[in-house]
Image 1 (cartoon, rainbow, N blue to C red):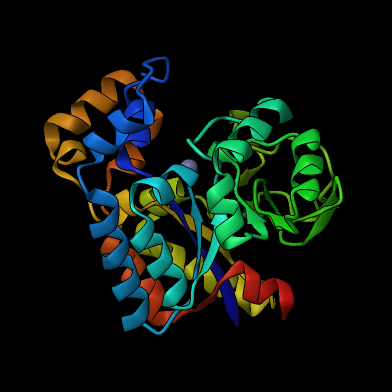
Image 2 (cartoon, protein in one colour):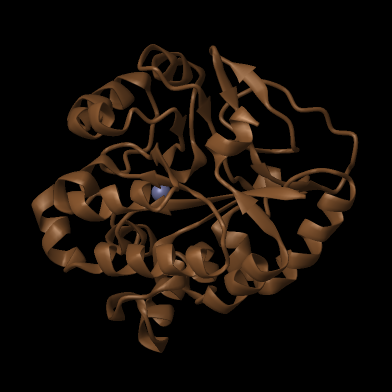
Amino acid sequence: MKNILSIDLESWIYFYQNAMKAKECSLTSSDRKRLDNNYIPQATINILDLLEKYNQRATFFTLGELYEWYPDVIEEIENRGHEIGYHTHSHTILKSSELLQRELELSIHFIERFRPIGFRAPQIFITWDSLVRLKKWGFKYSSSTYDEYGMTKIGGIDEIPLSTISFRPGNKNNDELPKHLTIKMLSRKIPFGSGLFIGLFGSRIHHVIDYLNKQKIPAVLFIHPWQLYRPKEIEGFSFKLKVICHNPFCIPYTINVLNSVKKLLKHHEFLSFRDYYYQ
Ligand SMILES: [Zn+2]
């Protein structure tokens, strides 16, 4: 049974800002590149080597600004046979489609070069009008919700949700948006396709994938590069302590999941969204 794996390719800076609740702090793209300090090229090559070792394919939902910073490494992702999707230009939360339009315009070189058909909204937050705008820009699918398995047409785009397991089976999917992570959602289902829950459950996710696959349902997962290969700035006990004080919700993201992901790659078969979409 084939499952779907995605990497949300973004610098650890965004996680740091989120974990410290420092979103209002306005770094420019060149500030972020300086702080990134060549982390993304190293982490991306490590991930590509890891996927190659286990003969697996994935979708890399990539920030447009990374193509400006490190064009060669983004080209390398495609050269190694993986899909390149879009994750906005600079990880803007899409509270309106005007924000998405601005991001798309900033990423015009990236869009023209890769012609991505797939989109992942930052923090899995998307509204109907943004999906309509994505269609106008040539996108075919989005994976920007948490829900039970099943593709739903919303705003002219095929929405492929990240995996959840419901406490009350039989809940029908609907086209209400957004479907992001909220306390209300957690009272009804576990969005185990989120990197946050891979951090929380580790390799135990393996059993959930088995459970779904036995019902002929693929698991749809995402992970961040900084969950696998950690820069020193977000490593260690003192960083964990800071996260507990500022944003304890982010604690599962401070756990290194490399060994858990290796186990998943060893025991399950993965493909990119594009391969799944066209198969
Ligand atoms: Zn992201």
